[in-house]
Image (cartoon, rainbow, N blue to C red):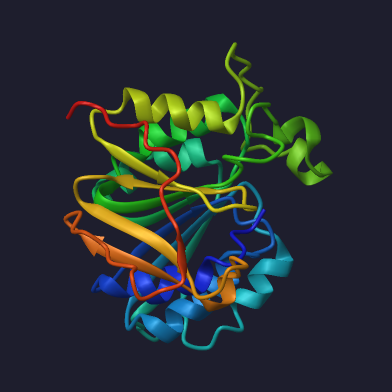
Length: 261
Protein backbone atom coordinates (compact mmCIF):
# COMPACT_ATOMS: atom_id res chain seq x y z
CA UNK A 1 0.00 0.00 0.00
CA UNK A 2 0.99 3.64 -0.15
CA UNK A 3 1.75 5.54 3.03
CA UNK A 4 -1.56 7.36 2.93
CA UNK A 5 -1.57 10.50 5.06
CA UNK A 6 2.16 10.62 5.72
CA UNK A 7 3.51 12.52 2.69
CA UNK A 8 2.80 16.06 3.84
CA UNK A 9 3.92 15.68 7.43
CA UNK A 10 7.07 13.83 6.40
CA UNK A 11 8.09 16.61 4.01
CA UNK A 12 6.96 19.57 6.10
CA UNK A 13 7.81 18.43 9.62
CA UNK A 14 10.73 16.02 9.20
CA UNK A 15 12.59 16.29 5.90
CA UNK A 16 12.59 20.09 5.96
CA UNK A 17 14.84 19.92 9.04
CA UNK A 18 17.72 18.64 6.87
CA UNK A 19 19.75 20.88 4.54
CA UNK A 20 19.40 18.46 1.63
CA UNK A 21 17.47 15.37 2.67
CA UNK A 22 18.09 12.10 0.87
CA UNK A 23 15.16 9.71 0.64
CA UNK A 24 15.14 6.05 -0.39
CA UNK A 25 11.90 4.34 -1.34
CA UNK A 26 11.94 0.60 -1.92
CA UNK A 27 8.88 -0.48 -3.89
CA UNK A 28 7.42 2.32 -6.04
CA UNK A 29 4.47 0.55 -7.65
CA UNK A 30 2.55 3.27 -9.54
CA UNK A 31 3.87 6.14 -7.44
CA UNK A 32 1.10 6.32 -4.84
CA UNK A 33 3.67 7.46 -2.25
CA UNK A 34 6.45 8.91 -4.39
CA UNK A 35 4.32 11.41 -6.33
CA UNK A 36 2.65 13.18 -3.37
CA UNK A 37 5.90 13.04 -1.40
CA UNK A 38 7.86 14.63 -4.26
CA UNK A 39 5.18 17.30 -4.58
CA UNK A 40 5.29 18.11 -0.87
CA UNK A 41 9.09 18.10 -0.79
CA UNK A 42 9.07 20.61 -3.64
CA UNK A 43 6.96 22.87 -1.39
CA UNK A 44 8.84 22.46 1.89
CA UNK A 45 12.44 21.56 0.98
CA UNK A 46 14.78 23.87 -0.94
CA UNK A 47 16.93 20.91 -1.95
CA UNK A 48 16.50 17.14 -1.84
CA UNK A 49 17.41 13.89 -3.50
CA UNK A 50 14.86 11.13 -3.96
CA UNK A 51 15.98 7.59 -4.83
CA UNK A 52 13.43 5.04 -5.98
CA UNK A 53 14.02 1.30 -6.42
CA UNK A 54 11.60 -1.15 -8.01
CA UNK A 55 11.86 -4.33 -10.06
CA UNK A 56 9.75 -2.63 -12.75
CA UNK A 57 9.39 1.11 -13.38
CA UNK A 58 5.82 1.30 -14.61
CA UNK A 59 4.93 3.72 -17.38
CA UNK A 60 2.03 5.20 -15.38
CA UNK A 61 4.60 6.35 -12.86
CA UNK A 62 7.47 7.41 -15.09
CA UNK A 63 5.23 9.53 -17.33
CA UNK A 64 3.94 11.46 -14.35
CA UNK A 65 7.45 11.98 -12.98
CA UNK A 66 8.50 13.73 -16.18
CA UNK A 67 5.68 16.25 -15.66
CA UNK A 68 7.08 17.54 -12.35
CA UNK A 69 8.57 20.74 -13.67
CA UNK A 70 11.19 21.57 -11.03
CA UNK A 71 12.46 18.00 -10.61
CA UNK A 72 15.89 17.21 -12.02
CA UNK A 73 16.17 13.73 -13.52
CA UNK A 74 19.25 11.86 -14.77
CA UNK A 75 20.13 13.10 -18.24
CA UNK A 76 18.66 16.58 -17.76
CA UNK A 77 21.07 19.22 -19.03
CA UNK A 78 20.06 21.90 -16.55
CA UNK A 79 21.30 21.52 -13.02
CA UNK A 80 18.75 21.56 -10.27
CA UNK A 81 18.58 21.34 -6.49
CA UNK A 82 15.62 18.98 -6.41
CA UNK A 83 16.78 15.66 -7.77
CA UNK A 84 15.38 12.20 -8.32
CA UNK A 85 16.86 9.00 -9.67
CA UNK A 86 15.25 5.63 -10.22
CA UNK A 87 16.65 2.13 -10.44
CA UNK A 88 14.93 -0.85 -12.03
CA UNK A 89 16.36 -3.65 -9.93
CA UNK A 90 15.66 -5.55 -6.73
CA UNK A 91 16.25 -4.00 -3.32
CA UNK A 92 18.79 -6.72 -2.49
CA UNK A 93 20.82 -5.95 -5.60
CA UNK A 94 20.70 -2.20 -5.04
CA UNK A 95 21.65 -2.43 -1.38
CA UNK A 96 24.55 -4.79 -2.09
CA UNK A 97 26.06 -2.67 -4.88
CA UNK A 98 29.46 -1.48 -3.64
CA UNK A 99 29.48 1.79 -5.59
CA UNK A 100 26.10 2.76 -4.12
CA UNK A 101 27.20 1.78 -0.62
CA UNK A 102 30.16 4.11 -0.96
CA UNK A 103 28.15 6.92 -2.54
CA UNK A 104 25.37 6.93 0.05
CA UNK A 105 27.10 5.55 3.12
CA UNK A 106 25.51 7.13 6.19
CA UNK A 107 23.63 9.70 4.11
CA UNK A 108 20.01 8.56 3.80
CA UNK A 109 17.61 10.45 6.07
CA UNK A 110 14.33 8.68 5.30
CA UNK A 111 13.83 5.05 4.25
CA UNK A 112 10.49 3.67 3.09
CA UNK A 113 10.29 -0.11 2.74
CA UNK A 114 7.42 -1.54 0.71
CA UNK A 115 8.96 -4.21 -1.50
CA UNK A 116 8.50 -7.96 -1.23
CA UNK A 117 6.51 -8.71 1.91
CA UNK A 118 8.25 -11.71 3.46
CA UNK A 119 10.51 -12.33 6.43
CA UNK A 120 13.70 -13.04 4.47
CA UNK A 121 13.50 -9.92 2.30
CA UNK A 122 12.51 -7.43 5.00
CA UNK A 123 15.01 -8.68 7.57
CA UNK A 124 17.87 -8.53 5.09
CA UNK A 125 16.83 -5.13 3.77
CA UNK A 126 17.05 -3.76 7.30
CA UNK A 127 20.47 -5.32 7.88
CA UNK A 128 21.85 -4.02 4.60
CA UNK A 129 20.42 -0.55 5.17
CA UNK A 130 22.85 -0.08 8.05
CA UNK A 131 25.43 0.83 5.40
CA UNK A 132 23.28 3.73 4.20
CA UNK A 133 21.60 5.23 7.25
CA UNK A 134 22.70 7.31 10.23
CA UNK A 135 21.64 7.97 13.81
CA UNK A 136 18.76 10.29 12.84
CA UNK A 137 17.35 8.27 9.96
CA UNK A 138 13.63 7.61 10.06
CA UNK A 139 12.34 4.29 8.72
CA UNK A 140 8.79 3.57 7.56
CA UNK A 141 7.98 -0.09 6.96
CA UNK A 142 4.73 -1.15 5.34
CA UNK A 143 2.60 -4.08 6.49
CA UNK A 144 3.81 -4.13 10.07
CA UNK A 145 0.13 -4.67 10.60
CA UNK A 146 -2.01 -6.06 7.81
CA UNK A 147 -2.34 -9.24 5.84
CA UNK A 148 1.42 -9.82 5.50
CA UNK A 149 2.22 -9.07 9.13
CA UNK A 150 2.52 -12.74 10.08
CA UNK A 151 2.46 -14.40 6.66
CA UNK A 152 5.01 -14.35 3.84
CA UNK A 153 4.13 -13.05 0.42
CA UNK A 154 6.38 -13.58 -2.60
CA UNK A 155 5.68 -11.34 -5.55
CA UNK A 156 7.01 -14.00 -7.92
CA UNK A 157 4.00 -16.09 -6.93
CA UNK A 158 1.21 -13.59 -6.30
CA UNK A 159 2.12 -10.52 -8.35
CA UNK A 160 1.07 -9.43 -11.81
CA UNK A 161 2.60 -11.22 -14.78
CA UNK A 162 5.41 -8.69 -15.17
CA UNK A 163 6.27 -9.26 -11.50
CA UNK A 164 6.02 -13.05 -11.50
CA UNK A 165 8.36 -13.33 -14.45
CA UNK A 166 10.69 -10.50 -13.47
CA UNK A 167 14.37 -11.11 -14.18
CA UNK A 168 15.46 -9.22 -11.07
CA UNK A 169 13.87 -11.67 -8.64
CA UNK A 170 15.23 -15.02 -7.54
CA UNK A 171 13.53 -18.04 -6.06
CA UNK A 172 11.54 -17.47 -2.84
CA UNK A 173 13.44 -18.08 0.38
CA UNK A 174 11.14 -19.80 2.86
CA UNK A 175 12.07 -19.76 6.51
CA UNK A 176 10.44 -21.06 9.65
CA UNK A 177 9.60 -17.53 10.72
CA UNK A 178 7.26 -15.63 8.46
CA UNK A 179 5.86 -12.17 7.96
CA UNK A 180 6.94 -8.55 7.95
CA UNK A 181 6.26 -7.88 11.63
CA UNK A 182 8.35 -10.83 12.77
CA UNK A 183 11.23 -9.71 10.54
CA UNK A 184 11.15 -6.16 11.93
CA UNK A 185 10.78 -7.28 15.54
CA UNK A 186 13.70 -9.71 15.24
CA UNK A 187 15.90 -7.09 13.60
CA UNK A 188 15.18 -4.57 16.35
CA UNK A 189 15.81 -7.07 19.13
CA UNK A 190 19.16 -8.07 17.64
CA UNK A 191 20.27 -4.54 16.84
CA UNK A 192 23.04 -2.97 18.96
CA UNK A 193 20.99 0.26 19.16
CA UNK A 194 17.91 1.22 21.14
CA UNK A 195 14.85 1.78 18.97
CA UNK A 196 11.46 3.41 19.26
CA UNK A 197 8.54 2.19 17.16
CA UNK A 198 5.38 4.13 16.43
CA UNK A 199 2.14 2.91 14.89
CA UNK A 200 -1.16 4.69 14.33
CA UNK A 201 -4.56 3.08 14.67
CA UNK A 202 -6.05 1.94 11.41
CA UNK A 203 -2.83 2.06 9.39
CA UNK A 204 -0.50 -0.76 8.44
CA UNK A 205 2.99 0.85 8.53
CA UNK A 206 5.27 1.37 11.48
CA UNK A 207 7.73 4.21 11.94
CA UNK A 208 11.01 3.40 13.68
CA UNK A 209 14.08 5.34 14.72
CA UNK A 210 17.12 5.13 16.98
CA UNK A 211 15.92 6.26 20.37
CA UNK A 212 18.96 8.18 21.61
CA UNK A 213 19.11 10.57 18.66
CA UNK A 214 15.56 11.24 17.53
CA UNK A 215 12.12 11.52 19.03
CA UNK A 216 8.80 12.16 17.33
CA UNK A 217 5.07 11.99 17.70
CA UNK A 218 2.23 12.36 15.23
CA UNK A 219 -0.23 14.89 16.58
CA UNK A 220 -3.86 15.22 15.53
CA UNK A 221 -6.01 18.32 15.97
CA UNK A 222 -9.21 16.33 16.22
CA UNK A 223 -10.31 13.08 17.81
CA UNK A 224 -10.89 11.23 14.54
CA UNK A 225 -7.18 10.67 13.85
CA UNK A 226 -7.44 12.35 10.42
CA UNK A 227 -4.07 12.91 8.80
CA UNK A 228 -5.24 15.99 6.89
CA UNK A 229 -4.99 18.15 10.01
CA UNK A 230 -2.11 16.30 11.62
CA UNK A 231 1.47 17.28 12.26
CA UNK A 232 4.66 15.45 13.11
CA UNK A 233 6.50 16.86 16.11
CA UNK A 234 10.21 16.09 15.81
CA UNK A 235 13.09 16.58 18.23
CA UNK A 236 16.68 15.55 17.68
CA UNK A 237 18.87 14.21 20.49
CA UNK A 238 15.73 12.77 22.10
CA UNK A 239 14.66 16.02 23.77
CA UNK A 240 11.25 15.90 25.44
CA UNK A 241 8.24 16.69 23.25
CA UNK A 242 5.42 18.83 24.58
CA UNK A 243 1.95 18.18 23.23
CA UNK A 244 0.02 19.85 26.03
CA UNK A 245 -1.53 22.49 23.77
CA UNK A 246 -2.72 20.00 21.16
CA UNK A 247 -5.73 17.74 21.16
CA UNK A 248 -4.19 14.29 20.97
CA UNK A 249 -1.29 12.38 19.55
CA UNK A 250 -0.24 9.01 18.24
CA UNK A 251 2.45 7.93 20.66
CA UNK A 252 4.90 5.05 20.59
CA UNK A 253 2.89 1.90 21.13
CA UNK A 254 5.63 -0.73 21.21
CA UNK A 255 8.14 0.23 23.93
CA UNK A 256 9.95 -3.11 23.93
CA UNK A 257 13.07 -2.55 21.89
CA UNK A 258 15.39 -1.17 24.54
CA UNK A 259 18.56 -3.03 23.72
CA UNK A 260 22.13 -2.62 24.80
CA UNK A 261 24.26 -0.24 22.80
